[in-house]
Length: 423
Image (cartoon, rainbow, N blue to C red):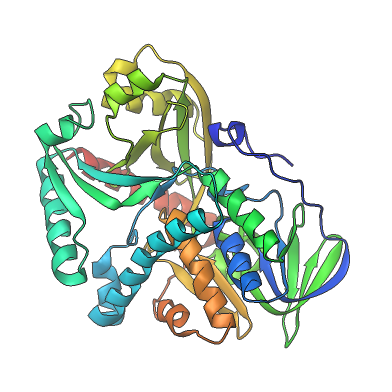
């Protein structure tokens, strides 16, 4: 099983093929899922002396962790108001602080483990119309006033035009503390660090079922792991392993294209600073530069679960809307993947049993937050569960309509939000 064809896979660092689990083994902790969340959990626990086995059904970083837009951003897709409504201002502030700490943890891990993942700091949320400007300025003021997050700087149209050679945007909110990276190489680096700390990683080891108890038995097609604790880090791919969790997330398809190499001079004429950029439409676009001077451009979503026809052409058309200067440029890679969203867009962390933990529902904010979530699980298993259990206070509803009708219902809802973006 290889990674899907993408720019990330084509530019990935060499990584070992880790053989499947065979036979019966024991461990202190079994981690299920080899993305950023799973590798981070394994790394933290192995570094603390726990005997850890990680099981990945395909390849390390095969899912969203190896395919995403790669932007590491503070906060949550839900926004703070939704968190405050559920848990109050004090706990919502503590959650926000966790999201900021996630950026610091990412920086620390990249440096400490010498992970070569093209990490750059700087990210912008950009406005397309006046109401977006008002939203972004209000957000900046709220974050500085209520959360002490004062690294955001407003750029008017002229200042923004000095960074991005486009007339698409009317202004932007520049954050020096957020950033972007090569997500596949970052995750591969975390996996290597986890192994160096003593974790055992098995690929091609799809978990079929769990036997709960004081010792949890984790079954694959060719073996078992008997563990005192289990951490489920499957996200959009939890499937039949935990039906109760599956009903609380919706796998959403998102798509990215990579241009042919443009050369340093041309890419810098478009993006004079190496920042990640995201617009603030409900159905948004995002883009950034690559290390070899391509433009990586993605966004939009498919709530039908199907890759729509002509995805590459449609994504390229949106790219040209931002940068008409690229009308003569070929697309060299086009790929997609699934993001797991919750109804509220807030993350869903908790327990299925006292010794079975889960992480899911990152809703597009996974690059930094998944790594921090792995640390929270490691803390909880080590006896410091306060911050992990903080997120358990959030209530998560199942998507309406059951398995047969929840996707069509969401498709109709998203049509409404796309119409709002045009208003």
